[in-house]
Length: 557
Image (tube, rainbow, N blue to C red):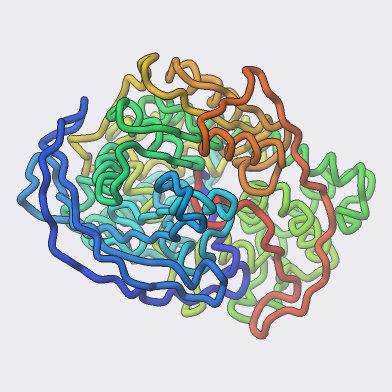
């Protein structure tokens, strides 16, 4: 599953940040001929961007945010046909006299937006880089403020690919489960149009190349997180002479993601099990940080709590938007969401301790908002719809081979006692998906020696994009440098390690690569959350907002 946690942007932790309409100016598009890149159909286009102020907060840099819309071909084989309208935002460089150019970024997913983040936070975690770079984010086709925007209009808790109850080989009603999966697929097809066949990563890379040209950069500077590393790898493979620097943080094994997604997700699930054990071992070693949960055996306490909730769901009266009791499956889902960042370990421990004492209000908030994307009005953020449909458009799942998914579901249940829900049964919808992008790119990702060397940053105990996948990506790229963070959680840049941040910023600014074999240490402690007054209508225990933004934006990879 989880190529994404559904933890919202920092300001949308438990009190969800309203999504305000950006002040976007839609201008005409001019087409300029350029050399066609390997793997890119048709001729590239260069849109005209009409920038206007669009910051949504009083933050010093957010006040300077500018937005525009880029009109680009939906199908690059037919550049004069239907268009997509790509929402773009930028924060101009602080030091204009020494400006290097633009730094594009992507938070992952697939399906994660960027424009909302810049509008609300300004340069945010990119503040150091904003001194000499314009920080540029765009919502990929089908995502966020770009139009058309994918929305299956589904209840993620009861209809989506990770809907409850999570089946096992002992209780799955195959006909009913397949019918539910088909109903979700049908809803996605019915509520969206031609865009579903044109949302591959390769087309997003082509859009990014058009935006690179539109902002006047001869070569791309890019920082991608999680699935955003697959976008960066794809861009580099398609346009090996059009980038100056690529940072790929929390990297996806490109070949595995496209060609063997079932094994890719199974490996990911195994590493979530490892992450759970590391968290619970840390709890045993520091009961203060763990809010007293589990005593000398937190793993046993965790399993007992789930077993208790399966028999008698735990009340959650303090979360007034949805005070339903919490089930065992809810605890599993909440745990998955918070294992994405070590910064959230203390919050998870406190929530588990509260639940063990009879109040699962914080767990309910985590399940609703972090895992399922439930909003204040009871609807669901369509980010999960985008994660599914974009991945399904290009990943090579077995088509119409139900037994392959049932077999993997049974294997996952036997192998992954806490998180089997992530692998096998949940992937059946991919096997039913008919809308595939003919312009998707399936490799090779090997880069010529003449191209700049990408900097690949990987965390040793990253559960979402496991370290072995990073090693495979470096081998696939050939010309790449691996920088390791010894630590926990998904992605490294932006407050986990000063060593990582310094190395990434030096590389992006002047092209300096860290020495081969460099290992940085994570500097994030495991601490109990500090009590804060809970906003009206939220859970009694609110979550901190110090996790990496790439995690907070709700992108599974």
